[in-house]
Image (cartoon, rainbow, N blue to C red):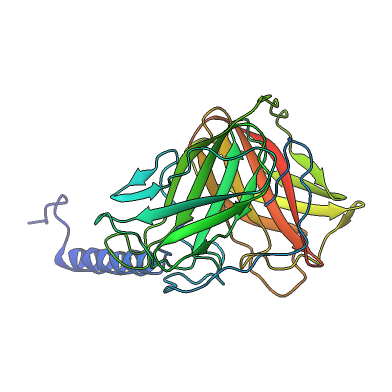
Length: 315
């Protein structure tokens, strides 16, 4: 009597089972090898930003839970930064207004779920905390690394601010506590008194210039989806290959959304190898909202920090 064709023979069943087990092992091995993370300048208009010739020193400390020497491995900050609190952590400040037209100190504290000031921060791109100031029309960008006092009070020494509404962002990763290893971005608004004139956002473009350098951006971005973004830097039509490390990488890229000032930090993936970076730089880009975003690219050559600004439209 012949075997039922619908029932595989024992040998066939054994081979099929062995193949399935082997396939599962390969899948688990691939999953186990994947990365856990996929991921100041005072210009008062939308034109080319002036350059800074030096970096102010920042107090360092805390435990580094992420290797800043490996671009793209830092934790990606969650949310759009438009709240002053998240998961029990809060950005607090007594400064609701700052003077116009002159340098000003903005003081703030990060408190934890226990309502006490946080003083232990992990290092992210060589700093324990990154601070940004941006006006509501996305002008006046400043990126600072403030100093923290022993009581947890941070002081950001801002360049002169133009009248208007400003948003102050702090990005950080707690080095201990319930938020240990989690990247946060929190913000508060301040008012700078005076007659405020709104500067229209420049049209979307793939190129911009600053200090004689041409910066070109390539990448078709879709809201809420991660896409590769490539930045190419040239000077006099020649590729730039003398970029120096800045914050542990060759360029720092920050984006703000037109209309609500939502924040995004685009993480670099280009490996750092001495003072000869460029001309091409790669980033992980994930912008959460459709519309125009103003990108600020900071890079350093011959000890001078340059800040280029460009508008990108995200579909």
